[in-house]
Image (cartoon, rainbow, N blue to C red; front, side, top):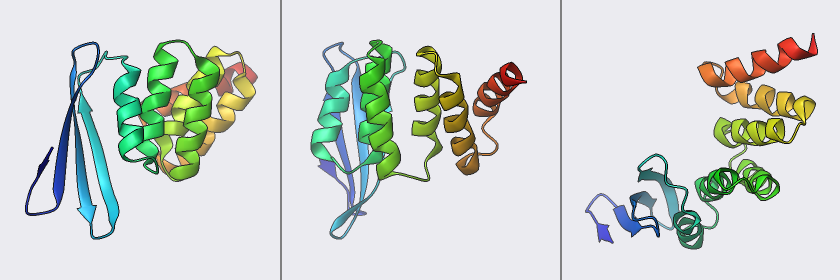
Length: 142
C-alpha cells in the first residue's frame, strides 16, 4: 500500500488466478471520496472482490465487483443480490442496474430485466450497450 501527498492510496492485490489488481482510493478527510479498481479483463477471481469489500464495505463498487465475479461463476441469484446492494449504496450508478438486468435476462425474467435497463438509462442515457439491451427486450414485448 502506498499513499501520496494528495491523499491517494494505492493497494495492490494478486488474485489466486495470478492477475494483479490495483485499487486506487482518493481520500477526503474522514471519508472515502472515490475508488477505482484496475485489473485485467477475464479475471473471475472472487478473492479480489472479497478483499475490496473487506476494505471498503460501503463502496458500491465493492458489491458490484463481487456480483460480476459471481455472475461469471454462474451464481446468478447471489450476483443479483450483490447488484441489488450496489444499487442501494449507489442509487444513481447505472452499472449495477445494467448487470442486474443481464442476470435477470439469463434467468428468463425479461420483464424485470427491461425495468432494470430502463432504470439504468435514466443515469446513463448515452450508454450504447445498455440501449441495445433495452431495445432488444422492448422489441420482444411488441
